[in-house]
Amino acid sequence: MRIGERLLQLRLIRKADLAEALQAQALYGGRIGTCLVQSGAIELDPLATALGAHLAVPAALQAQFEAAAPEVLARLPRTLAERYLAVPLATRPSGTLVVAMVDPKALGAIDALEKAVSARVQVCVAPELRVRYWLERHYGIDRDNRFLRGAELEHGRDDPSPGSERRRYIPSTPAPLPTEASNARLGRIATVKRAVASAPEASDDLQLDITVDARRRTDAAARAIAIIDGAADGDEIGAAVADFLAGAAGGGLLLTVRPEMALGWRAAGPIDPHVAHLIAVPLGLPTAFRTACETGATFRGQPPAAGRSWHDRLCTLLGQPPAREVVVVPVMGAQRPLALIYAHTTGSASLTHELVGDLEAVAEAISAALARRAAAATRG
Image 1 (cartoon, rainbow, N blue to C red):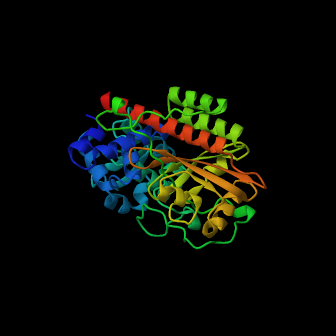
Image 2 (cartoon, rainbow, N blue to C red):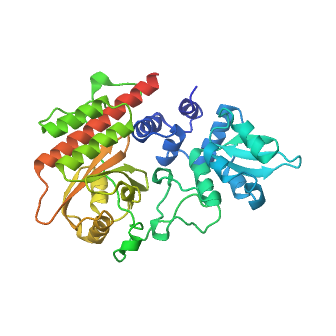
Image 3 (cartoon, rainbow, N blue to C red):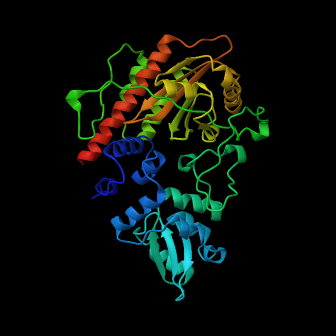
């Protein structure tokens, strides 16, 4: 039995939660537990307890991480902590070191840890998001954007509250445009959703929609959709979208969506991919992202007046002139958007109906591909 099925059996999640997590996993990888937490379906401590029962090892909860003393943490070298995703928690009177791991049954891990600390090691399991948070907090091992759980860029990556595993929210009042040296602290911006027509003839136990409406598309969009349909993983999907954006829109962004924020994932055209990974968009700001999310449809047009300063900050971070028009198109999962496709025009240029239609067709193709993969995963 897989952990997703175990969580269903324990009634800690719903079928729809698992369906959405499987689609998110198909798009940007990761562990199913991580995807469930990031979707808001389950909290970390209940997941840890379920993982412990599933793997027949003790579970490490938040309280144990908070109680870890500096001298205990110092026993495990940073390199090994990073390699095995391991955090020391306590030392037993016998000298045994208790270590929380994402994969406590990883081949050779216990032997390597025991050799490094010259003592016995007792392993326990903890969710990936928690372990990565504490690796960053204790060892300075940076997390990728995809492992963040809350907004944080206003105050950087520091969180002064002991034990806090969520980041601070950036204030919703506009702030001055960032200087060149501080462009990495953009702020955040928001999300979108769009329904995909259901397909009764292709339904499955999770009731996922897996077809795309036929429509007239440009050759470039048709090529992107063909790649998406045959993609082996989310990286191929992301690359296909980025290539299409670069050619059809002159650049743009693909962002992954969390309940609290959207995170830069792929850059297209002249946009620096390293800068794209610094983007974290809060879902509560008055922007095109938020409007599209709340209306459940693609946003196209000039940025909302109340959120204009945030869109200008985004363009500054991307090294672009202020946007004249923007388009934000959602990639829908089982219950909510999993990703956003973003593009804008500058100067006197306007978005064309053809481009917006192509972007919507590409987004729907991604939704359908993810639904098919999620349905296959439940049958496998």
